[in-house]
Length: 339
Ligand SMILES: *Cc1c(COP(=O)(O)O)cnc(C)c1O
Image 1 (cartoon, rainbow, N blue to C red):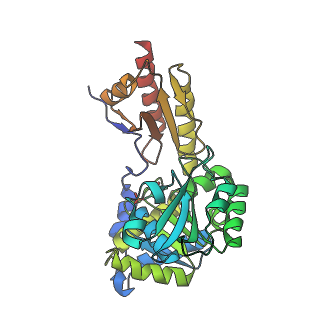
Image 2: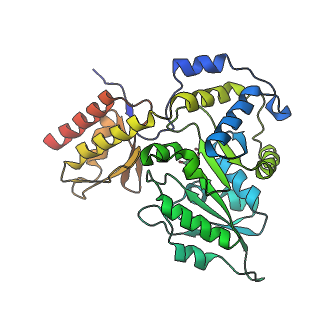
C-alpha cells in the first residue's frame, strides 16, 4: 500500500482548511484598485496594527512586498545593504536592480543570521560622486529559521539611523520569531521603518503578504504596486484567507516549532547525519559523504519530501504536518539506517 506523501519542503505548501475556505467564500469584496474592498482594508489595518505601523498594503507575494519596500525607500542609483543569504538579495531574481535600478550591497551573514556591525559601517558609502548613495539596511527575521538576536537588531538599526539610512525588515516569518522568542511581533518590528509579513508561509493562507510602514511610504508603495502589476480587484476573497490565518494560526506556530525539534532530535541520533538545532520551524541536514544522496533518495522513494539545496536537505514543519507525520518521517529514517 502506498502511503500518502508528507511534504517537508516548505511552509508554503499548506492548503486552506475548510474553515478558512468558508471565510473566503463569505468575504465581502469590492474593487481594491478603487480602494473599495473592505476585507483587504481590514487585513491591511490588522497587520499594520500587529506590526505597530500606521499603514499596510496587501500584495500578491513576499517578493513583491520586498521589491515595493526597496523601491519606496530607494531611488534609481541608490544602494541597499542586505545579507548575502537574505531573501531580498539572493532569492528575488535581482528585482531591485532590474526593476528599481537599485544597487545591492550584499554582506556576509554570520552563523546567527546577523551581519557584523563593522562590515555594515564600512559598507556605508560617503557622499562622493564615485559611489552609489547608501540608503537602506535590510535585515531578515527569521533567517534560515533562526531568530535574529534582538539586541543585535537594536544596534544595527541604530547604526543605520546614525548614518541616515532607512531600515527594512523582511519579516516573512516574523510570527515564528515572535512565538519562538516570546517577544511580540510589534516589539520585533519596532526598530524598523518598514516590515514585510508573509501570510502564505506557516500561517497557512493561500496568497499574499502585507508591507507595513508609515502612510507616506505605503502611499509610494501603492503607486509602485500598480506599476508592477500587483493592483488586484476583488482581492478580498484571498485577503479573507489571510485574515483568517492571522486570527487563528499564530499561536499554533509553537506546535510547528516543537515538531521541528522532535524531528531534528530524532534524526540527530544517526552518526551519518549532521543536523542543525531548530529555533523555529526550519532546520538543515547534511549526510556524510559515505551516505551521499542515498538518504535523500530513500526519503523520496518513501514519500517523505524535503528540499535539497547545495547537497544540504532543508526540513520545514508547518500547519499541514501532524505528530503522526513526524512519526512516519522518523520511521522511514530509522528503516534507512537499519538496512
Ligand atoms: C518566502 C519568502 C519571501 C518571498 O515570498 P514569496 O511569497 O514566495 O514571494 C521573502 N522573504 C523570505 C524570508 C521568505 O521566506
